[in-house]
Image (cartoon, rainbow, N blue to C red; front, side, top):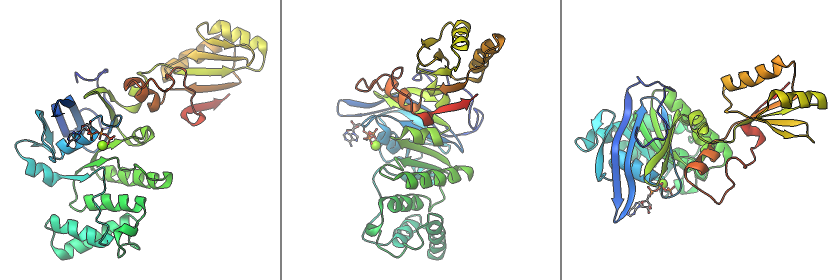
Amino acid sequence: MPSSVMPTTNSGTGPRASAAVTALGLRKSYGDKTVLDGIDLRIPAGSVFALLGPNGAGKTTTVKILSTLVSADGGQAQVAGHDLAADPQAVRAAIGVTGQFSAVDGLITGEENMLLMADLHLIPRPAGRRIAAELLERFGLTDAAKKPAATYSGGMKRRLDIAMTLIGSPRIIFLDEPTTGLDPRSRHTMWQIIRELVTGGVTVLLTTQYLEEADQLADRIAVLHHGTLAAEGTAEELKRLVPGGHVRLRFTHPDTYRDAATALPHSTRDDDALTLRAPSDGSQRDLRALLDRLDTAGLQADHLTVHTPDLDDVFLALTGDTTTPTPTTRPHQPDQSKETAR
Ligand SMILES: Nc1ncnc2c1ncn2[C@@H]1O[C@H](COP(=O)(O)OP(=O)(O)OP(=O)(O)O)[C@@H](O)[C@H]1O
Ligand SMILES: [Mg+2]
């Protein structure tokens, strides 16, 4: 993957899983603005792939190209085994798309929106009614089914949007910012829905502004910046790209603290707090080596915390946002560290 800053490694569904989506050298310009400058993607079947990037990075453009809504200026892609340029009809038949902006018609009811979609898929009316009812039930919309969609909350509309996408039982779905604007509870519900889809074998390409969302859901993540993929990998791989990982060790007794500082010469000392900060990538091997050094010296920390960079750090580092503190100085939230009281 030439546009990646790191090699793709085995993970998630594994390299041998057949690809639901592959793209090679995708290009797209609007006027003299290059939006995509050679994008390579490989999304294994049955996995979740998250496309991250700042506003205007080209996420929606990528989704639109892969779902045949706009054509690329260059490059090639296969979706569900069909060539995008040669057989767009076959691609369309295999996919479902939930756009960044709702496709829900507010003037008609949720149920009518679903039936309209069933008609578009040429599903016979009785089967359409059954599928619509099942999906409305699954998405917790049965009670609201007969009400105009304009009266739905944002979360309900988004659920209806995705339910409409699933009418044709697509094996590959594109979700462009599925949870933007949703409250935390609705976001978690949506994550659950996406996880269930993937458990059922569906492949999901989603775009998101929420790095936690990518962290929670995605097998692999790509960061789009300046028309290319600045990085691609698992969340863990991406986090290892940025510096700032460390282990913080706190001691109660000054003697132990002093001896530990000697045993861990590369650590930064905080003599007042009797705390050492040892650089670490947070990997099992690295932690074991560090603890072995303490064990060898017969020392035990009273409290130990592992701080790994989070995806926010990765995003800011890769997309070059200099208005926010750099990853190395940015304080980490407690819930982003793995705590181990010793
Ligand atoms: N139809 C169009 N005509 C001209 N420019 C366009 C068109 N569609 C997109 N663009 C431009 O292409 C760039 C990428 O847009 P795109 O919508 O793909 O970004 P995005 O990553 O989805 O952003 P956001 O996070 O805001 O949704 C932007 O600069 C946008 O203005
Ligand atoms: Mg967009």
